Image (cartoon, rainbow, N blue to C red; front, side, top):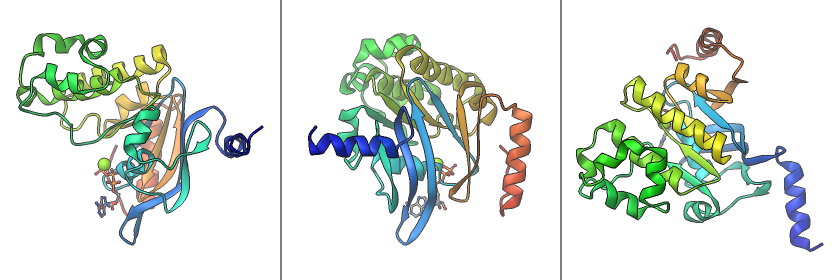
Length: 251
Ligand SMILES: Nc1ncnc2c1ncn2[C@@H]1O[C@H](COP(=O)(O)OP(=O)(O)OP(=O)(O)O)[C@@H](O)[C@H]1O
Ligand SMILES: [Mg+2]
C-alpha cells in the first residue's frame, strides 16, 4: 500500500461514511468576520439536502466554502472521504457543480448557445427540461426568470456532476416553477445517484423533496432533520430557533 493510499484511508475514516461531499466542522467568512462556524453537513449518493434559514444566516457562505470559492478557516471539505483543497475549477472536473445565486446566463446568446458552452451540451439538458426545446433559438436574456433557472440548473445537471450545489433555487420564482425545478433535482438524485445540496427559501416545498434538511441561524446549524418532519413541526422548530436568537422571521 502506498503512502498516498494510507493517507486517503485515514481521511475516509475521518469523514462521514458513504458521503460524497462532507462539510466537516467548517468555519469561514469574510475579512475578520466568521460568517459560518463549525458547520457539519454531508450529502451522499442519491440524496437531496436542503439548507434553510433566514437572510444572512450563512447558507450561501456554506456553499461557497464547499465549492472552494472561500477558504476554510477551520474544518475541511471532504470529497469522497479525502480532504479537498482544490480551487473551484478543479473541483468541477472532479464532479462538483455549483449554481450560484446570480444565474449565469449570457443574455445576448441564444438558449442553444448558452447550452453549447456548458459541459453537458444541448440534448442532455433537454432530457432534464424538455420545456426548453421551443426556446432554443431565443436570446437567453428574453427568458422568464423560471426559464432562465431551468436553463442554468439543466445545464448543470447535464454536466453529470456527482454533487450539485444550488443556491437560491427559487429566487423570484412562482411556486409552480419551483416545484418543477425540485422535481428535476429529485429525479437526478433518484435516477442518476447525484448528491444535491439546495438552498431554498420555500421551506414547505423543500421539505417535500429533500431527504434531509439543515436550519441555519446566525452562522450556525441549529437544527436538522429528515423527511419525517411535517411542515407544521418544522415551523415550530423554526420559530423556536429564531426566537432563541435575535431573528423573528418566518420560514
Ligand atoms: N462578501 C461579503 N463580505 C462581507 N460579509 C458578507 C459577504 N457576504 C456575506 N456576508 C455576511 O455573511 C453573513 C452570512 O451571509 P450569507 O450570504 O452566507 O447568508 P445567507 O444565509 O445566504 O442569506 P440570504 O438568505 O439572504 O441569501 C451575513 O452576515 C452577511 O452579511
Ligand atoms: Mg444566500
